[in-house]
Image (tube, rainbow, N blue to C red; front, side):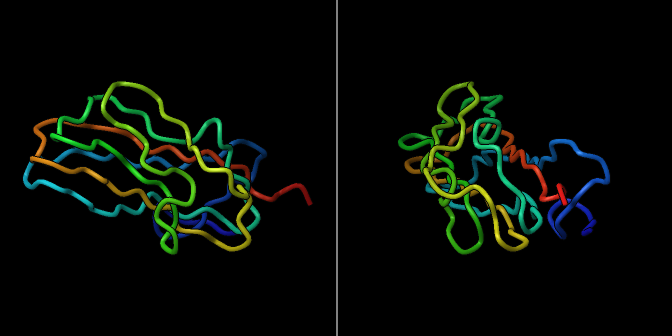
Length: 137
């Protein structure tokens, strides 16, 4: 059973429950065309991501001039699970890709801003990845 802290190692609790990763993202307002990549955390091998419970929760709508979008994926594919999810208004935006949601190895989940146009002055969101570890054996 792997244990650790969010972002550095896959986590698995001893009881059967839904696990999750959560990462805050903020519009910094310092530059236009932001494309920072953030590590959300690591999910363990065999875990299944719960697509309907996973995505981005926008608390403060982003204000960059043109595109107000976020990708959610892995270090190998930055938009594997969520491609160009809108953060233009307050809402929960679920993952939108039709891919296998069970990972075969410990997997680092990432999120990246895809903001274009002039620099924004506001924006705050939480990336939430809910998953169930492979602990039924």
